[in-house]
Image (cartoon, rainbow, N blue to C red):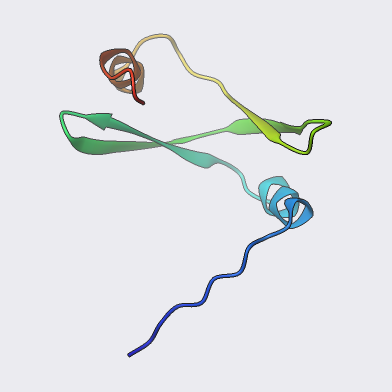
Length: 73
């Protein structure tokens, strides 16, 4: 049986991946079902070597309703 192996990426490798993708996917939950939507994003590497993401969206629509309806999302 095939067992996948995983290797942790360094923060620099993660930044390289992020710099070379056109968009990300935001996943939220609606009535116990996933709702996944592609979104453009930007990110910033902070002084403490953490990442902050910014995704822009309208204030209306399905994903915003999902966020509003579930405080854990």
